Amino acid sequence: MLLALRFFALDDLLLGPLCLLILYAIIRNRAEKNNDPEVRRIYYRGFYFKIICVLAYTFVTEFVFKGGDTALYYQSVQDLRAALREDFDYLSTIINSVKLSKENPLTPFFTGDNYAYDYTYNYMLSSSNFFVPRLGLLPSYVFFNNYLCINFVFGFFALGGAIRIFKFFHYYYPDYKKEIALAAIFLPSVGFWSAGLLKDPVCFGSIGYILYAVQNIFVRKKNIKASVIWIIVCGFLLYFIKVYILLTLILAILIWQFAETNKLIADRTLRNIFSFLTLFISFLVAYFLLNYFTSQEAAKEYKLDTLLDKAEYQRRVIQDLASTAPLGSNFSINTSNPVALVPNSIAATFFRPFLWEVKSPVALFSAIESLLFLLFTLFFFFKRGVGKYFKLTFADPRMLMCFIFAMVFAVAVGASTSNFGALSRYKIPCMPFYFMGLLLVYKKAALHYPKWFYKILKWV
Image (cartoon, rainbow, N blue to C red; front, side, top):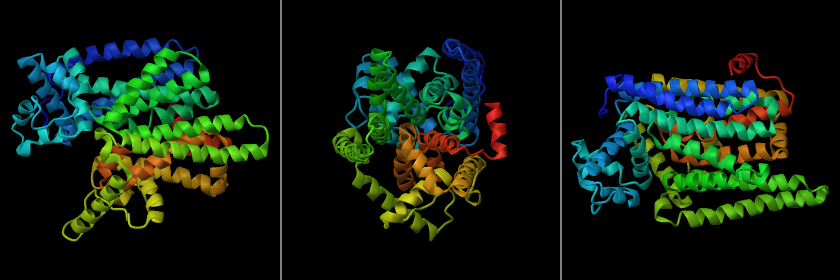
């Protein structure tokens, strides 16, 4: 499938700089409000880094992937525009439609794309997929349907979320700004996969906006009304696009807030009792939220038994393929053993693909990043021990939040994904939190980073 666009066409050269000028004005306005020159520099470098990621992603989607998911989303934007050109009253249908169906009046605009097997129409039968072109419709009109500019807008939203993750942790650890910036803003795989017309930049950005808004409401006690609006809007986006991210985030935030309260208890015995109650109540609330949310039509596919069935089905498919053809970038995790499922899923999410599993140049970058994560983790375990890692993590509410979000998310994604290409996209929400927690553990343990890592921090 090929994209219905040309990279570096005339409209890219004209509209691209205009879009960047508008986005630069926004980032400059936010950056100059900071008194710390290092923080201002991080804002600007984050913006330049995101530009590079968007250009790289746009180039790769056309000349390497030859379309992929982005092509279907972009084509769907064209189909929605075609519907509005015919009758602007279709706008209410676009807003109110959760997904396509045979009865939906928008369907004829999607089945006429001349793609084999009606790819676009079938892809939009999913409510989470159909949400993306509806979001892309607005920037497509603002920037005259320019694909590059739409990518810039989606990437900029993700950057906004990344900056808010940075601001969240910088509030607690002002002396670690370089480490926090690296984890929140400058991870290559996160920057790349949150740089285009996809679900991923919307979800990643929403995480940052929600987390920072919760901090403003309960900790900093400022911008309450705006923060409530951000939580509602971004919670709405996550619910309809990837509700499991919302559920994991709610669990992590609950544990963080309970742990913050636990620190205020002076008596050690009472504190230990409250710690136990914290975990018990948090998981109990998360369980009821999981059952409530996944009972809705838009989220039934994320019920726990559905996810486990899907993971087992994918394992069987991969085994069947292995007996008849090379696996390529596919992999399988044995879901029949629940004890092995958790560590295998975590390892797949954070530390794979290994270098010998790489089948494409694009996957090589993900493999190198995963290798660095593995080496960084093993280096700490070797120098300070596994027990020290958990002791320091559970002693700090923010680090505990990072750990819970990263691990729960890693298990869910690693167990239900059977392709390294898809996994490299799906795992980006948890990567900053795992790396953030790891860097903070290094600081808390007074352990020096490996020498090569200081060169990276110097650039940040």
